[in-house]
Image (tube, rainbow, N blue to C red; front, top):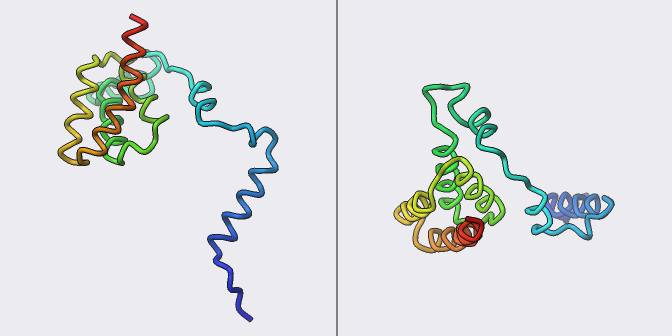
Length: 133
């Protein structure tokens, strides 16, 4: 006797049923998750991601710019992660032009559509930062 259903579809259906069982999941929104994410202070970024523990390594600003480049290379599909990376890059000391140059450089490797999408996402953050200044 063979089961004609797709095992992946069965797994996805089970996961969806499990997610429905969690309280408040029907009210989940990506915007709410984004608002919940805090901004890590520069000192903390340097300690965990920078060259505090690895003096010859990359500083937090460079690591965040590399993260922006990587997210752009993936097609800038994760808005929240890209926004958070831009926020943290600026917090780590990156200037607006450095963020723009990082994304622009990725046009050569990721293509113009990915670069354009990443630039649009980053521009929202950069515009907000200009309003704060």
